[in-house]
Image (cartoon, rainbow, N blue to C red; front, side):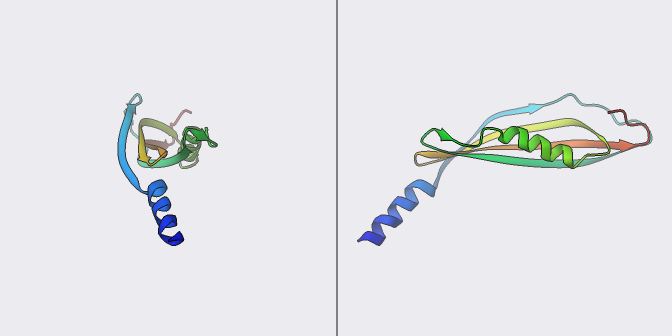
Length: 110
């Protein structure tokens, strides 16, 4: 009986119920000029919340820092940011996914 109760509690807290896209933002787009190479980069981060109690509040900043680390010698442009939430029973997970273009070459100005 105890094992069945533990399984029920586990399923209630850790099973996915719904998912929602809250916002999708696109930054300014910069055209790449001659001599510049561009490549697509992406990074993400998440925040787990139980009954409104949050410990990691800088998950968006962490995702942006990961994006910057992937383009150290270039300039980031055309950033697409997607904010979604996966809802569970008395808990949810906020997710940030960022994709961008990294412009690199001889004439890149940061």
